[in-house]
Length: 262
Image (cartoon, rainbow, N blue to C red):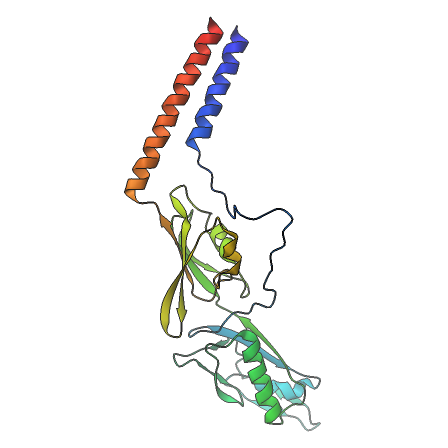
């Protein structure tokens, strides 16, 4: 008899737990075995206030030294070797994109980089060096030093997050923020992005595979992700549904216990 009561009690607990927890299912319309394209060539776009690490190199390292010095000088020895002056300051903080979208680059001067992709900025610098006959085959490497985005709304943890590099998806950003909360509207996830000096909002339904085709699937610098919470009316409806199902589970559990004991 005691074993029957224990099993009935466990059944009641399971019923209560299943009713109290509401699960969120992402990408519900994806099909098993179907292949979905990936943008492997995605590149981040440069914006104002970005900080870029730019390194120039070539087969003759001494020729690249002037392009890697910011606000300093270099020396030419008696043997013809070029070395950086010990008093020079290496550009450790990177090149800041000013309010006009320009960077001050050694030797080349002001370069307009706002709105360009990383690869386009790399080609711009490379072509300028070749056109000026400073080097024949320069190698230019560019990295973001302050790539960040913000997540607000119905998530586990609101805040601004930094990225190591310049590539992160909307799903990864939500996961970093502690995933969606129970009050999140899974079909009302917005990305607010600055485009050509104006802010635009893109709305997403995380249940749909159409997310992969969104221009915001990969976040850009300073994007704001806002997960819309349910309104109070909707909360009340959910609360009423939960109370009703909970009461039904209790009645079912009590009935089961009484039946077992008899």
